[in-house]
Structure formats: structure tokens, C-alpha cells
Length: 132
Ligand code: 5GP
Ligand code: ZN
Image 1 (cartoon, rainbow, N blue to C red):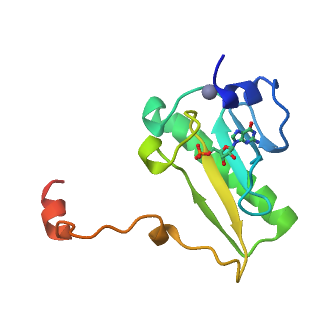
Image 2: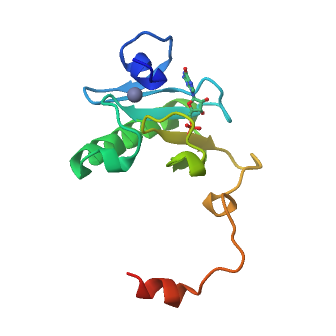
């Protein structure tokens, strides 16, 4: 088994569990960007949301909610940034689906989702809408 997160599921790598149920485990990120930085993963291996059924993705989202509530209770942040680096181009280093929970505090200096990428010379939104 090469996948580092599958090794965490198997209990082969030391980790600090934040939340766990039969299908999901959430643990503290080993290289946190903020106190309480948590990673939520399905216990079943798969790289992206496209490798799971919509029901399975729903279960992972429930895990994200449950883990966030736990972090909220304990660390009392002012809010959260919750998201995933989905695919290598988006910065996904570990090819096992995972959501990041980043507790946020007023004045922490962090940005919003809108700071992730900003593209110039885009097609107009009306032109993109035609593709759908
Ligand atoms: P990615 O860049 O793939 O979205 O995020 C992977 C995250 O997993 C990173 O934030 C990284 O610090 C974390 N991570 C990688 N290996 C381990 C590990 O062995 N244990 C824990 N707890 N976190 C890890
Ligand atoms: Zn895996």
C-alpha cells in the first residue's frame, strides 16, 4: 500500500484524530497552516470526487461538518475556510481525496477563496454560460 492516507486509515502512521466514523476519518494536518488545520478523508481510497458515488461524497461532507463542529467547539475560531485541492494542477499533493478545514480568526491575515486564482483575458461569463 503506497498511499500515505490509506496508511493513516490502517493505523500504520501516527496521527491525531479529530473525528472518526465508519467511513470517514479527520486528523490534524502534520504541517498545519493554522492551529487546528484538519484533513478529512474517506476511509476508502480514491483520488478525487469523481472516484466516488454522490452518496459517498455526501458521507465525506457529513464528516467535514462533524469535524468542523468539533474544531469549533474546542478552538472556537471565528470562521473556517473549507476546501480541497482537487487534482495536481490545483495543488493536490496526496492522491487520496481530502478536504482541508482551516480555522480562521479575525486578523489572521489569510485570504478568501477568491485569492486562490485570478485570470486575465477570460471569456465573458455569458459566453461560458452558452456552453452549459
Ligand atoms: P494537499 O496538498 O494534497 O491538498 O494536502 C495534503 C496535506 O496532507 C498537506 O497539508 C500535508 O501537510 C498533509 N500530510 C501529508 N502527509 C501527512 C501525514 O503523514 N500525516 C498528516 N497528519 N498529514 C499529512
Ligand atoms: Zn489512499
